Length: 148
Image (cartoon, rainbow, N blue to C red; front, side, top):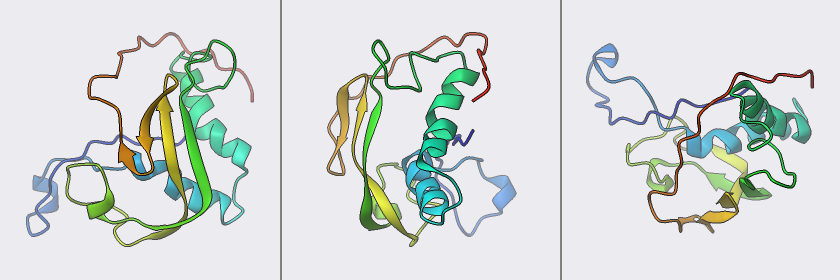
């Protein structure tokens, strides 16, 4: 499983590192950095990437098959991803209000064009189009882990 704690907090680069709040903005870059590092370098397959980012976490938290798969009855959480789009990750082009990114200046090949939550658009052409408040709390269940 590959995951992000995505706990963005403003940091003072001149202050003592250990005296500041822990966490970093990383959910917006998780797919792209993992894709660029893993797929573009031939380290993992696209199927394996989908397993470690989507299916396995859903199984571990007991949310599969509602989450983590594309099949009738699942939630239709999707990403439309352009594997050929060149992109430079900068704090100024992130949606987080943290004001920084761990990947400042990193050039990647591949970037999401659109995302959907329960079949409804969230991100479209780099712009957040959903209204706040679409999230829903999901109670986790005992894990149903089967060999993959």
